[in-house]
Amino acid sequence: MSFELMLFDNFLIEKQAVSEVLLCNKITEDYSLALSEEQALELVETRSDSLKNYGRIEFGSGIIEKVILTFADTPYISQYRYAEFLNELVEIFYYFKNETLDLISDDDLIGTMKKYFDGVCQGSLDQLKFRELERMAKNVRLGLDPDYNDLYDTEKLREAEDDDE
Amino acid sequence: MNSVKKTTKIDVDKLSGEFYFQSLLQEAYVKGVLSPKESERVQLECLKLLADCTERFTRGKSSSVRVEIAQGIMASNLYTIGIHLKSLPDVEAALFQIENESIEKLYEYGLQVLKRKIKVASYFYNRVCKTKLKTPNQAYNITIDQGFKPFFDHYEINFHAHEIPSDIDYQLIHPVTDLAGVEFVIKYLENLYYENLFCSYFDADIIDEVMTGYDPSYQNLLDNICEQVFLNALGCQLLNAPLHPLDFSLADLDALDRQLKKYSQAELQRQLKTAAQELITNLLLTNPSLKKYLIASLPKITTTIYRGLTTHSLNKVFVPRNNPNIKPIRHYNMGIKMDDAAYREMVTEFLSCRFFEDKLAIIKEQIKTLADMEDLLIAAELKAAEAAMIFDLLEDIELAVLTKRHPLHPAIDAIDYSASEVQMQQNLNAYMRALPRDRLAKILGMTTTIEVV
Image (cartoon, rainbow over all chains, first blue to last red; front, side, top):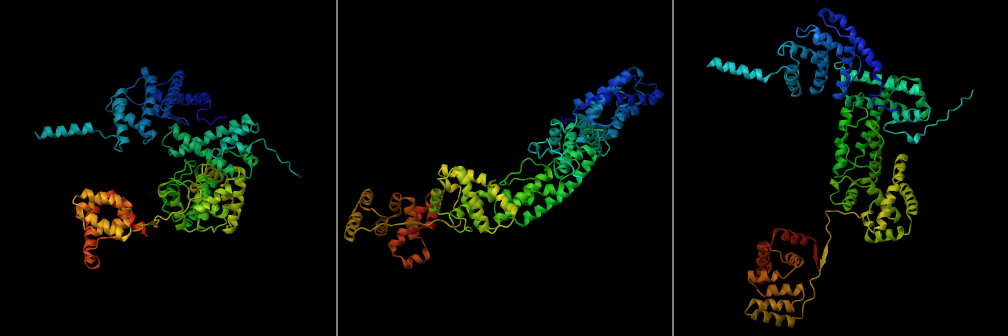
């Protein structure tokens, strides 16, 4: 008998997770967004793969529902790429959980992702992942304010210098 | 009604001290005491407990944790359950609880046991501090003074119960193995307390001298002090000598060698056991645990002594005391002076020589003792350069003897010594000052340990 953490058959756990994801459709339908059962299963599998790839373990219902509900009202997503978009968001979430050394809570990380996605990134997942969240993770690791942006400060300094001239 | 006692199939010796719960489940499953269904229930409940603990760990702010953190929490949980099961009278009672209590309940019981055990560790730590030996050994002092501070300040029973947050460098006669967490700390402190208790029967300064005899820089070593004290005490007991000096002369070591070399290792251990029991009686040791601790160290000590006998290095096993402040005295004989007539003739010839090489030839040919050399150096009234060439012929110890007999004291020399003696002192002083610093220090060091006959 082994006490490995991953020794249990994930089938039952995944089945339950899929039904919980599908329940979110009731809310997202107001925004014309919905996942099929197949897409929900794919999303749950993405979560499992991400957890495995980033060396993490999750108990309970996980963060998929939180991601779905938080991003439901974003103006930059449509039903056309909804499933693909959610898969990427889930993967990005677990990557930055590690990158921020678990110093930031689930709710705060999802909230920050939403803020940048709707704001400066204007719906670009690449900008979200490779620019804003990288900078935020670096700030968190250095003990700075997550929103601190030295580029922004430099630009402001330049503008002030231009005004003086 | 008489209850039928259940005979267990579980081999208690196969159970791990560090991973008790896991090893018990493993054994019970393999031997069929625990059914597959039961073992599955235990696993599922362990996983549920892990989920609950992880939620407490993240304070509900994160639904996921890194695998190594989850593994640490799981190990802590299993250790806590194991510590409760170990506190039960026997394996049957432990298995009964596994089958009839929920894992969460067992974990809660384990937390209570852990809290009690921390108090036990604190008790032993106080005993260790009270009986602490006065010694310059750094590992010993740092381990007691600072090593356990992290444990009592930061030991965390909820998520890291199996860890040992302490800096323990000092080695015991019986190293603590197969234990973790607070159990390790208790066992280590208990063993250290017994060692302190034994050492307290001897004077701390004597122990220091014994250890200096073992190694002059023992304060920097990680070696055990009590073991050497016990070895020396056993040696004194075998010689029927007084125990408290813990010292051996060369004759004592020869006697021990003759006494012990005839035994095989098994016979030697029997002899040592007898000697240890006599030692315990003579020292009036009353603590039964201390007696047991000392007797249990005999196999290891027998091996050490047997190796010392076979390699003819018993002086490294039963080490004579060494006080670094007392230096051994060396006696130096100046030798017999030559006949007066011969001496007068030699001096006349020496003084009449035109070249210094001839004078050196006379010295090499006719001066056989330092007593004659001293007389000649005074009588010849040599110049500094000539005297230096003669001093070059002397060895360090001879220069040390001359320095001791003719120290330069300008204030009193003019009154107490003749002009030729003062001249010789000044020449010697000038020569010594020109020597390399290392050699000069060596010669001056010799002057403190030489007694001129």
